[in-house]
Length: 167
Image (spheres, rainbow, N blue to C red):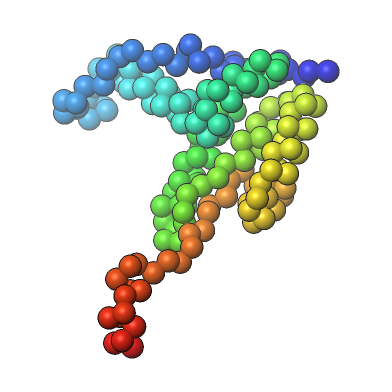
């Protein structure tokens, strides 16, 4: 039995066809812009948030694959994924030991909308395919992202014989 959301708008890749080019000219401050320009700026911001949210959920192909199985992703879910992306990116950029972010797209969707039973099975399979135990453990515990730790690799010049001789 498929459970579909009964409220909210859903994602449609055709809605994201952004045609208006962004001008490179210096723009006046927001409060100096006419209402039409402020509205266009908001529309571009909303468009960008949707694109980043879709990216965090695995991209348009992933969203379309879920839709083909009967799960329509709500815009509210995509905007939540955008917020999660921003939070994770801020933490990633401020962490010198980080090496990228892994998103738990299934958990993000589960947290924001009702999903059919097959979605939980797909999620269990995805968890079983994770080979990094720390990521798998965090995702089993419902974390929505994982900041990958970098391996401490000495720069080439530190591994040289000159470096070793001077110690």
